[in-house]
Length: 104
Image 1 (cartoon, rainbow, N blue to C red):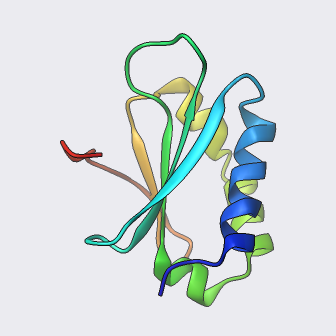
Image 2 (cartoon, helix red, strand yellow):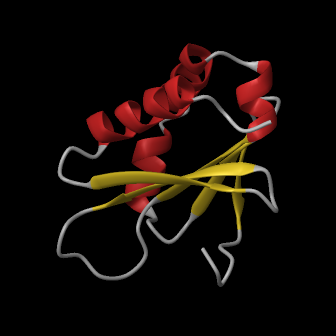
Image 3 (cartoon, helix red, strand yellow):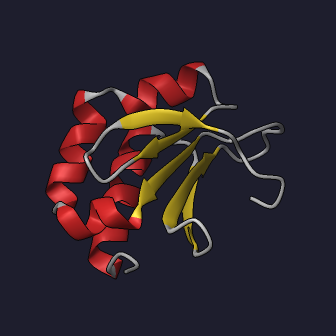
């Protein structure tokens, strides 16, 4: 089941705090059941930092738990260091690097 607007907003706000100069956006990718978040600084080229959160993570955990996990694991720092990496937060709040698809 897709996340609620409140859940999406909580993660977007967390990323906006971590990337204050970036435009943060998100979209549901229904064929993989994830909500994809991007933080692109205006005028930049190349890959933008991306975080995918599984729908199952949103189903099993509160937005506060998800945001706390992102902060504890220093996800923003990791994305800043390697903006070409897409990180996935899974149902168990495990974090792993996953390939970017050609369409997203």
